[in-house]
Image (cartoon, rainbow, N blue to C red; front, top):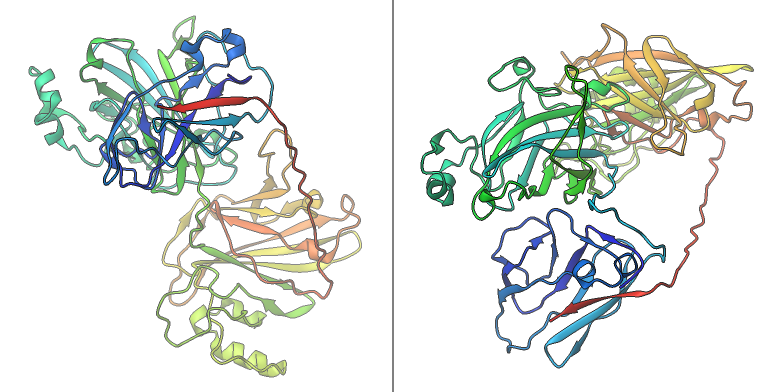
Length: 565
């Protein structure tokens, strides 16, 4: 009933009587669980692929296009037949729903206000606009038949600096489909018993289902090693066989994509309809690190054909976007600061990469880390205690008891100010690998908002300005990689860290008002992972504080109605 077309809508319902949801016509649980399922703590129902509700203005109030009706079936305990949910609402971002009201014990409704009153008109094909995310996945149906179809799945790394290693992808089939063949990737398990003892065996009695690649309702897909790229039996797909590594496009556009093709068999009642194709739902990428949305129907992908005078297009295309979750993961790296005019190092923070549950000898995980002499930077963290105590005594400091815990980071980065003169200044970045892992093709991203414009060159590393990460805001970071032959950060051996370093030079011509505090990065990322920054700088100038103001604009719009009958 509103002004705007609602794309990818979903309905949230709060229950309180130990309800078991058994069925929901043409609807699926947003979290991907299969029915029957316990929804006593509430649930969200949505369409897969993403559903569209047109607005009343462009359809002249046609209820067939502006309304969706579905029946849900379930079981509840200890209540009479008129028991209703506690609340219902539309979960679309920006919509504000009123408290649901119940009438005659059998009807519940709520009114949801729109975020704006702009009239939206949709095209006849009902394609949704593509979305942006850290990772985007396209599901292209390239060939379709009554009982099967071929699909090309492409994963693109659109994150500015995240590198995904050993990717794994999973989804949940919505219509009991199964995979007979795959090129460019494979599945972890076949689960043939699902096919041999289920509807597939009854439907395809002449097919040898023992050769099916995966009958799992939720297959887990992994990449193939580099050596399979030209293997005509399992490889041969453009962007395939990357050994599970997806690079940021700013580092290597060719290595930022991974693709594979699969042959999908359909089951009744969908197997007799060539146009009846439902993409998988509940997409998952990277062991929970990324949260993926619902598949959205977008315009079919165009595939240039070098051997033909015209391009070909997919039969149908869906897009899924995945973004990194807000759940904090343990850091893998930390940063220390030092300066040529100060003999102390501001070290990595205490427990910068997390602390083990049991620590021997006992240390204080909440205490601030103690200053180090510069000579201690190459000493293994486990062996620094004598130098820390001696340095504290020399500087007339009383060490706490127990001492602060160490940082427990495998990779440590030191940013040292080498010089500061009228026309410019210089720094040295040193990478230390205290772990037993060697990092091939390492890279760092160094954020320096106030010094970025003065960067001139790095002498032993490749360092370039990061391109803008969106369409409007300029970036203020340096992208640093190793030169040929220096692109391996070696693991620690015999209590000596793997080490790489380079001097960076900056000019003050483009940054005449730069302060000493601006010589130090605000953030550093190593191989796409954010490093823990130190607690302060080896300078005496006070850091300025920035404040921000949030302005909220409230727009009153028409209401849309949700009915629960």
